[in-house]
Image (cartoon, rainbow, N blue to C red; front, side):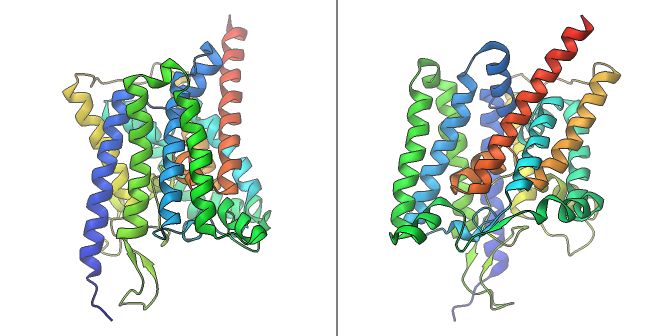
Length: 371
């Protein structure tokens, strides 16, 4: 067996992920890429411009991921999204909580990191509360509640829950062929829709759509290809180096925020190692901050009043609990998860959008009642 330097592989994986995350932070700061903002624009103004950014990124990620499946580089079943257990209720409840929370907190997990880079102190508070509640939902008191309730409701399939695997089992067509066809068809349709109007073809939309989507694909390649070891010399098992889930990962910004806080608090514990999720959190903040400073967008911002503070605290709590329960956020499920064509991801994204719309309607109701 060829000797493998796991530490060298880990270093490559972490630096590559960090670099791609810096790019993501800069693009997001430059273009105002934000799922919550996109939903808000539609509900309040009927403006679909920013939604076209997100949909374009989604399409690019779908195409890129499934082409890598088609050529044998990746397998959706080796991610947290493509397993046989279809946790539809967790995705539904967790997604709705996350979507409602991101509106109250003025943005999702990734937007929180971008806003921290731009000098927003409110988002720093959201970051801490989000991380603590996410960790509690991974391993603490809300984890017990999650495991004993919604996680028990699931459908165990005979194959992976990604669409290529499901259709391959039913038709006998090779999964790699179906991945290419479905990835190009569904992803291509999303990109075409995003580009179908002039506002979808603006410079910022093209940069955000293709740039963010390419970053998601890039991290999939880094984790699933560069970081893949067929036989770890220490365990003699297949391994994906430097991931928290021990499976291949792309970007997500709920559980990784919890892991980043854990790493910071227990830094002297040699068992606490850097992972793809942790360095991606740092990379987004750094990329956003660098662009904010260079473009003179950086400015300090704090809470307006007690009501504003309460709204952000509640929103952060809902995002921490909901994001872990749903196995991801608007990036984790909305881009990384959907790129695998996972059934759970489709349910989670629909629930996130529904939760966000409900929160926006609630805010409008509060304003009207106060008036």
